[in-house]
Length: 222
Image 1 (cartoon, rainbow, N blue to C red):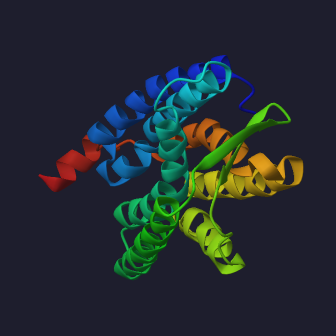
Image 2: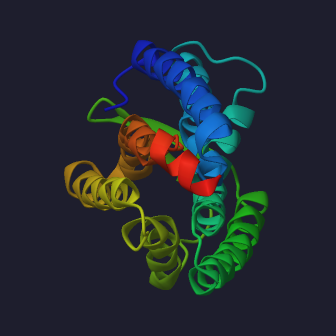
Image 3: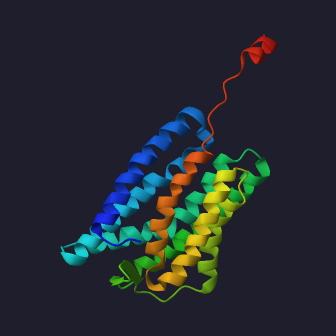
């Protein structure tokens, strides 16, 4: 995954086009899924950012480190916050909504912690490992519980969803997380974000169309 500038640009364009269609579909048919429909568009921005990082790797320019920070901030903070809140918005049951909102609030705390770590970092080093970009923030490695919490916040609201296709998406996201760690640990979140971005198109199947009532149902209502 993430083999080049061209790959990131191609993924960005594809995700942007598909994401636009998904947002339109959600607006018309299933507004509870609107936050989830935004996922491909955010992944598109993420891949566009990584495309600039790829370009700066070959052709450095002044201020290119800002794009390393932007890519890392999106990876570290957006998904553990947005995923639980998107799940809360998509659910109907109040108990599940409360649970996901609590996880979303936990994600906000985690995001603030990681942003603070980045703010105090001595920069972000990048390297190409197995044809993927490895981002190394220059700060003390967070405790294992932070990594565990990150995965829980980004995966649990999906695999425990009431919507079958979100469960499928969550399962794929978790499998690709394990695969990214095993295949390319130094560049795991770059590899994982690309894979999750591509598979986020599964969300389109979770956006349910409003069923038009049959003629007999209309007569019964009348």
